Structures are given as C-alpha cells and as structure tokens.
Image 1 (cartoon, rainbow, N blue to C red):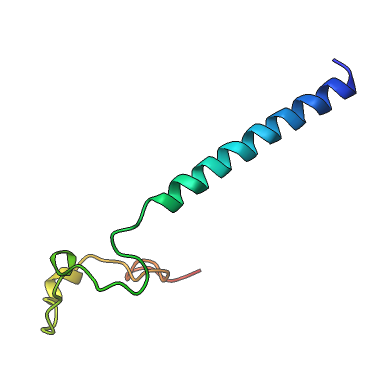
Image 2 (image 1 turned 90 degrees about the vertical axis):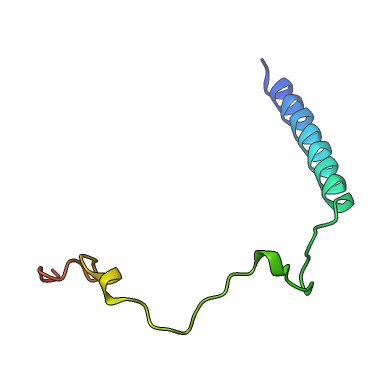
Length: 75
C-alpha cells in the first residue's frame, strides 16, 4: 500500500469512529437517568449507619493501611 492509501484508510476509519461516537451521544441523550444530579435520593437504596461505636473485635488482626503490620517496623 502506498502512503496515500494508508491515509485514506485512516480517514475512513476516523469518519466511521466519529459517526459511532455521534450515535452513542444521541442514544445517551435520549436515555433519561432515574436520578440525575440534584434529584432526591431513592429511600429504598439508602443505608442507615448507626452512631454506636463498632465492636473492637472487628479490628483484630488488621493492618494499618499504609503503615504495614503492627508487629513490624516501617522501612
């Protein structure tokens, strides 16, 4: 293939990619999200987090994130 043939193939592929992206943008614009920005949250999806402290047994055998294991020194 010559350089001109390669350039024409690239242009065709870019044109096809542009058409596909435009189709996706139109499709996305037609679909309305259930809860867009500023919409009230769906109560069925909300999780209540209690104010009571967690049981300390949950934290046994855990490492401090970024600090390594408790029984070892950081480098």
